[in-house]
Image 1 (cartoon, rainbow, N blue to C red):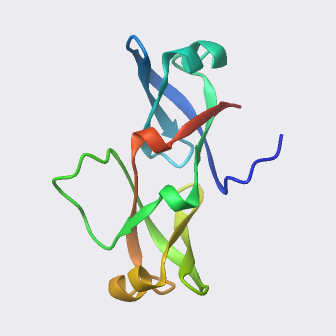
Image 2: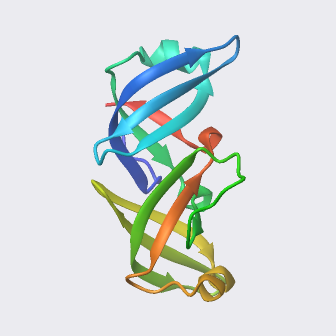
Length: 139
């Protein structure tokens, strides 16, 4: 199956905490970063997820926010450091490619945000992704 989601990072499930309707699944990405996905408990069962399961963490580029330094006081669990490798500006939006350990991410943000943050190739950034915006696929 082909998907339009650009960000597809391989990893391994390290833990699953299930609730009545939702579950949190912690994943160690192949680059060593830890991310948390909040998915339905039904999806956990359907995918057969458990500790050691190989997965792909999927996140739309529009769901990746960027910061230029450490961020405190946020509920966003997933904070992946990286370096901007390319900025491609369009009419209103820009595509920002980020090199991270073990791969890359793409963030779709406004041109104003690119300007305000001073993003250029070589800029250090932190990608911020809410756990509810990460989907999982069995590998």
